[in-house]
Amino acid sequence: MEIPPEYDGKQVEFVVEDGNKVIEVKIRDTGEVFRMEKYQRDYSKDKNRREEWSKGGGHGTVRSSGKKHGGANGDRPTFYLPSLVKGIVESLYEDDNKLKWVNPALVLYKYSPGGPVNGEIFSTKIGQIHFEKFSRIFSRQEEFHGLLKQQQSFLVKNLDEHRFCYEKKIFRVLWRLAVGLGTNHPYEVSMKLHNIYGIPIIPDTALKGIARFSLLEEIYEKEIEKNKESMKSLEKEIEKYPAEEDKKKFLKKIRNGEFDMLNEKEKFLLLFGSQKFSGVVEFLDAIPIVPPKFSVDVINPHYPDYYGGSAYPTDWQNPIPIKFLTVEDTPFRFTIIVDKGRLNNNKKMAENVAEHAWECLEKALEDYGIGAKTSVGYGFFSEG
Image (cartoon, rainbow, N blue to C red; front, side, top):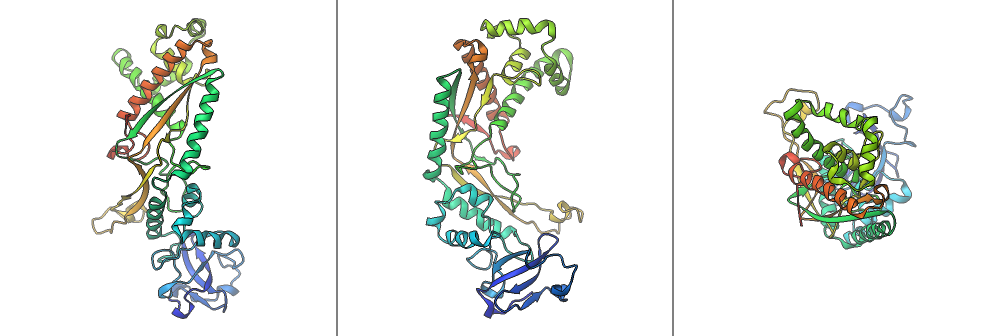
């Protein structure tokens, strides 16, 4: 589908089929319509057309080379946003000095530019340009980072004055970190950013999950020598623990601050809980202690047709590089909160619980890693 050069810069509307194929473009000023060759019929009179102009496939601008631009053939991307917002975002996107004041989470999640390029609305080529621009503008940016750091410090200080106690440690990512790679995104690769402050975070649920797994693995290694039971059966056993006749003894040890008297399964239950017993340890989101450094990396699928389910994995298929965002060379602050009130306000007991939780988390971060692509060295940390 070729659009004559005289329409360069004109506003257009387009029709989309199957979610990502542009089959028809209409010039707003003149009403002239251009269609792909295989769709040479008048869709405006077809009651069964896939999209109505009013509901539309979308809006955009014709740019250089007579093609509707999506970032690969010119310098002005297309944004699929309401008309009142669209013009503002286009203006901001063209000026890096203005764009750096926009919330990074909005830029990544909501203001991703589109195409179409080769009939695809969200082309991989446009995604590469967008991620590189994001990395360039928001790396080592102080403005948004300081706000979340202050908020979390204020939160834990107030908690410490009541029934909770907290401890924090600094761990530095050894190479790169990719958390939230599978988060919903037009380009199907993303990153977990704080929705308000726009900085990369490691969610509390992820931290609790790997720390819990680390302790479960430790118990399993000891138990398997005796019982040869599976990890799954061990989890089921801990879920039922303690038995009714042992429950009073378990709670008495907690009230008396006898942490060393607890067995491994009781310590697991005290820290992480079960369906019937709530653990006393909470993990906060890990946040960078300095403005984070973003970096763009590449996934290179060698068999795109095979992954799409349409062919066998043959050597003559063309690899399609897919760029995605990572964080590198950035130290993170990890914070653990212990519910001292449930430990009879026993400070020593709370410190023992926190120390045990740190051992689990540190082992997990150093031995297992966190996030995506840990098998190739992503997501590993060391203290300090």
